[in-house]
Amino acid sequence: MATVYHPHDQGYEARRSGFNLAVENRPAVIVDAGSADDVVAAVQLATGSGRPVAVMATGHGPSVPADDAVLIRTDGMTGVDVDPVRRTARVTGGTRWRAVVDAAGRHGLAPLNGSSPHVGVVGYTLAGGIGLLARRFGFAADHVRRIEVVTADGSLRHVTADPGGDDPDGDLFWALRGAGANFGVVTAVELDLFPVATLLGGELGFGADAADDVLHAYADWARAVPETIASSLLLLRYPDDPAVPDDVRDRHITHIRVAHSRAEGDDDHAEGEAWVERLRRIAPPVLDTVRVMPYTDVGTIHHEPVDEPVPAFDRNILLRDLDHDAVDLLAKHAGPGADAPFLTELRAWGGALARPPDVPNAVAGRDAAFSLLAISDPDPTDRARRDTLLTAMAPWGTGGTYPNFAGVEDTAFDAVRRGFRPDDLARLQALKARLDPDNVFRINHNIPPTPHPRTGDPS
Image (cartoon, rainbow, N blue to C red; front, side, top):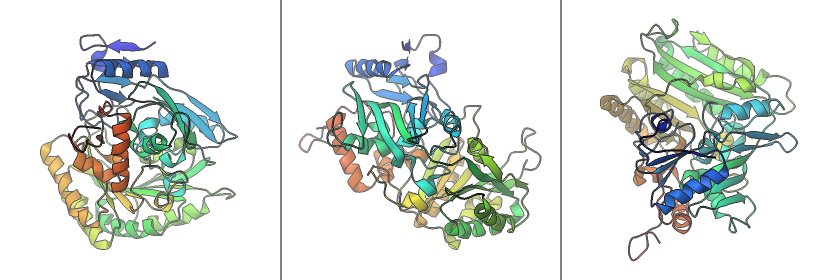
């Protein structure tokens, strides 16, 4: 049975926020759901009282405040059921990737999780999902087989790639994979798993004196590597803090993170070792953690923080290319001499990410060569400097953004629309008008219903 919290109840304060504290939520009601039936009842409560629905599992991807909403917490709905013969996993709505990685790993399989296993499966997957196997296999959303979702009418629907039943025309299954939060509360998904048992993975860290050489070399290297190699580059000045390791404290470090997955039938990671060795020859690294690891250690490659909630202000653009002029500009704004008060990640796309999925979906960005993500603290001056970097890099952009990297400052429709292809956005708005005309699911990076042609109200 669900636990319900109102603003003056004990437990309300602890349950109204997630990992990213960039937005302040003051919902009218918090429902700790333990089952799909609890979610159905919570959606019906919201629509019956004229309130919007907000959904939170881990709270890594906040958008707009859930004020006066019914906030459904799904993090109590956890469970993984692996079918090693079909190479699939059924995952309930609040499950984190850590549980799926571990369960699949017992069978020599791997999911298309993100760089942090601490993140929830559903939100990550429905917004696209680009992790350390993505260049080889594609977006996580491309490999969803089945979705169980509670829609705005309060019904639980089971939708798959095969139209019929709860999704007669296949539109809902198409829309959920790319714009899921706008169309319902997902209570379970069935995902493909892949025969990846080990990675050659880790990071190389280079000091400030090598930064320019590393940046230029990485841009060329990332374009040339095979699809079995995923990589990203992180630019970060570490604080002068005793809690920071001595080898990086008060230093600007250029990190290159890599993950090589063996193709089926390969006996070792020799291909990956050869490509990593090219990076080691650029300059002597100040840290080197690259080694062969079980896939279950995938979270150690990016080693992103998981313990203490933080306010993080994320923004991103997608790049069609990264030539040497673009690299010089990136170094100017985020390299050692910039003393940038934000972190910058450049992540290589391409490979399978550039190909259409077997079953079409609403995920965009397949024309991108790189994503450029910049994350600031709340200080307005620091956020302005972050924006200066992204504006400077815009001439190399595709004009698009990646929804999973969008933050609380990009919730206006003009920003949201950059995460979708124009024709797809029109189709999503029309479907929204049919399935959620009152825009019950609007506590997100919202896609509003198509306005009625005469009144301007949703049809």
